[in-house]
Image 1: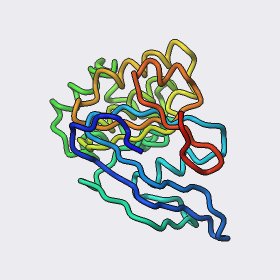
Image 2: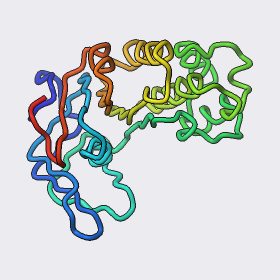
Image 3: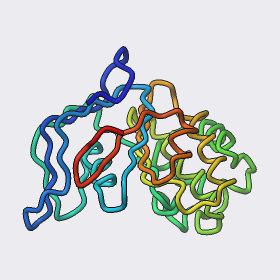
Length: 213
């Protein structure tokens, strides 16, 4: 299975990959999947089907207790992750601007630029601790962190499920505008609106396998 944009170089590919739980149960099988630079992909499917496992397999960072076999080829091990709750990507008590500069080694000017791009341009926002931000603001801050990481692959695990519809739409607009055209974005979601607004190709996961979307 190819994700979409065949003319651009691969960022990561999986071949004959199997993820197993500690007791040997097969959680996910992927015969072949290639994600290319510039791809926008929505991974859909019911709860427990293996969407999060697929994102972790693509990242090369499986949860504790899981093991993988098969082949994973990647152009870079740098991967950015946007979680369901933005706070999970951030230290809750460190001022936002300080930790973005420290974690990504970006200049203060670049941090201000990206925070402005995600709607957190007020200088007071950079001085706030993430725990003092609203859910939508924390999610935008997590996107800023992912953008500043300059990773060629960005993975987002149900990034809008905890947001109301208006905030969800603003976050999706950010994905469309602040992520570089050479970055690949893979988003797991239950929400068909997410795939539609991102203009994303679809990959469906069911019963631990990739099936036609």
